[in-house]
Picture (cartoon, rainbow, N blue to C red):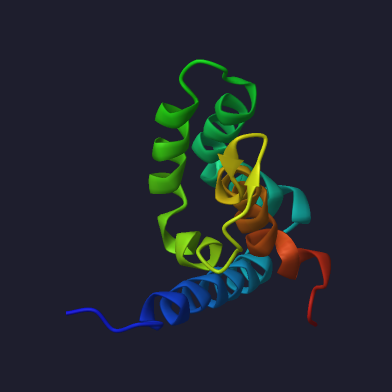
Length: 116
């Protein structure tokens, strides 16, 4: 059974929970560098895949499909983008590599503005 719009709501909920997890990590970790390292290690496979997507010429579709799996919780938000093409590829091909640093930054964001 499909409920239209529920995927968008759940993606937003995922982003909110990710931010809350960053707040919790900010409280228990002694410094920002540890939280930055956790964000980097957590998204390291995504960074590698994004690099392969941006650098590959022959197996572009293979890497982008794996990156879609990596970014699954946030992919419904990509569906809100217009269906434009850039350089012969859909716009979402270029937005998926941007989701990886966005997710890592969203986790690290509470460390930049600590609440006392």
